[in-house]
Image 1 (cartoon, rainbow, N blue to C red):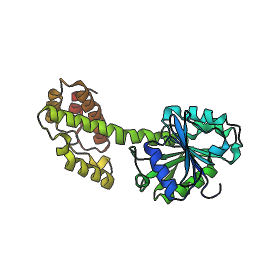
Image 2: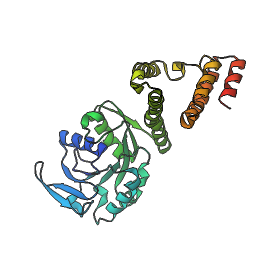
Image 3: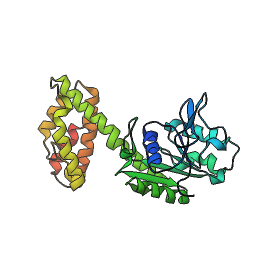
Image 4: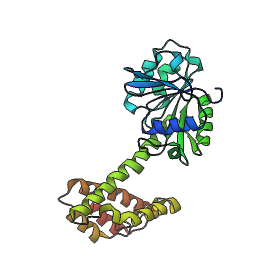
Length: 288
């Protein structure tokens, strides 16, 4: 692929806005941008034509050579099918999606037409209006056509991030891990916030900020296993019992406490921190 090909972005949402900002600042020519029911075709850097009533380019004159599909995951394949209906030479096109959950093969219908395909997933959380800065200093996973990945590696390095080249199974593992580390972390801290506010601690999760920050620092300094503290790590059956009694009327919080307690106990077992008796008593409490 020649340097700085013309770009089309389909889906200028949270992640899309950051990539559009990058392409503009990196002196790429943006050919067109398309959203759910309209588009914008760029006749020059400063002049564009608005399109209403359709979500896709009509012909090659409205389509760049590097096409980024940054729509919701559920419609990526539908977008690929729509694009495949265009009567053009796909051998000069490269198509990239930014989903963490889908492999590059979700674009296979375009590969069959001759296009190079890849997945390029920034391992970061985004909000609408984010700029290039959100793409800096993160890992960005790459999976798909080898030649296209080599080109995309250059883009990742250009945004001052680290390319992470994965196979399909690794890519899925990364996305599952990211859900635990980000989405489910939010859910856990929301549970903490709810428990505090229900009991009259109006500042909620804010009072835990130093604890959370130190825990995260410990994890990246010592590793997760060596960062575990708290009642299960020290075999404190009395405290675990008191907590479960207090949570007996709060089903979701109680279930979370028990499930995560089992994970903590398994970590403790692997490190031989407790006696067999302590482990046995804790297993009874969290219903192994």
